Amino acid sequence: MPGYPIVHVEISAKDPAAASKFYAELAGWKIDHDPNFDYYQFSVEGGPGGGFVVPDGKQYNVGDVVVYLGVDDLDASLKKVVALGGKVLLPKTEIPGIGWYAFFSDPTGNRLALYKSIMQPS
Image (cartoon, rainbow, N blue to C red; front, side, top):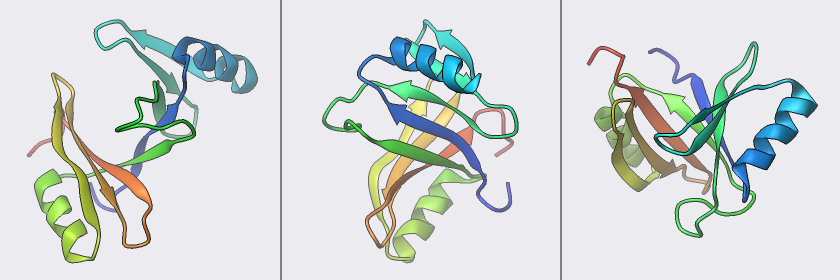
């Protein structure tokens, strides 16, 4: 996956169902609810999709927006983050049956995430 494209965006929401309804009506986003993870997802024509996460004061805080960059090799990308002066904030974590992600900060303190789909070849 050349170029580390933006593949997903997560928006913190105290009430993901209400946030989903708001953005569906405001922007016409298509909303899907995954009951297995109790996760509200949105898809946007012409752009990356994403989801709404409940702030927990640890991984997500009120006002957070996390941008996920798609990668072919999550482990190698995390090593590159560190080599370039960034920090791994959350190591490689599995989303069962979907893929893996990890949070990092760049040298200026911005928090982003890397994501590898289980559907991508290794």
